[in-house]
Amino acid sequence: MAYYDTIQLVKGDTLPEINLTLRDSNTAAAGQILDADNILTWAPIDLTNTTVRLKFKALGSAILKSTITMTKHAPYTDGKVFMQWPSGALDTAGTFTGEVEVSYDGGGIQTVFDQLKFKVRGDY
Amino acid sequence: MALRLEIVLQDAQLQTDVVKAELAQRVYRNMVAAGIFTDSATKNRVLNDVTSFLDTATLATLKSLDDGFGVLELAALSVNKAASESISVSDVLTRQVTYLRQFTDAVAIDDAFDISQHHSQTNNNVTFVNDVSDFAFTHPEAETISLVDAHNLELEQVQTDTVSAPDVATVIHYLGEGKIFNRPLFNQSTFG
Image 1: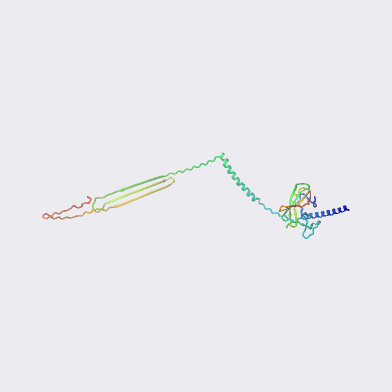
Image 2: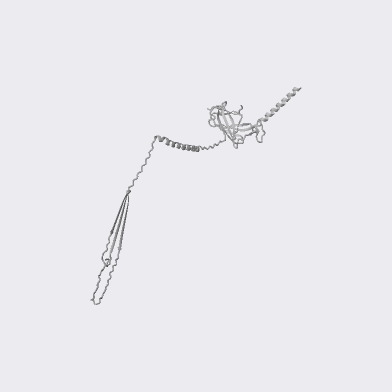
């Protein structure tokens, strides 16, 4: 089970905002030569007519703690999305994981295989 | 010598499988999250424009239910109240009309006929007819109608009698006789 680098957060916060770009590592970006070690050569995924969500749960738990809809950058063709933490999402300290899911309006769903990892410490 | 030849063929087969695996991995789209970073001073703004039509939906639903409740109330009135409540409606209309009519009809005929037995005079025959009708109505509703019809009929009939009384003087002369003056009666009436 592969994770991206752990994002460190503090309980009760609503920041920082999470930004990421969805790309296809098997397709070269326009004008680029595909290089497996250079993410800038991977083609961004067109997010037109899609909904991107982050499913958030405690590490090892089977129960979702929160499902957060991520906001797309217009005009949606560069694969960029960001997410702001809703109130209550970070109300518990611990280690959490998240998966990014893309739902197409036509009914298709594709989820990023690797997961995000969050470490939330207690606040004062 | 024949055994060494077979080993060379296996190496060539293994190389072929590796190439096929490489091609299959590049066919599907491998979605990855790249360039993940956090931003505490973001300039991203999320605009939420939420329009609620809950008010309209509530009005339409509740009004329909209230109308249906009105039907139930009608059913309760027709069944339950009939057994425990008695409703009596009495309406008495009295109308009394009294007519008091009084007709008074008085007819008086006074006929005086006088023919004077006088010659060479005009006889006067005067007839008087006096008809008086009195109608008196008394209405109990404070209305009084009084009709008085007075007919005065006066007829004056003048009769003219012509009486002719010719006087004829006849002189008869008899020869050898003395003169005799024959005088007829005067004022001889033709009425006998």
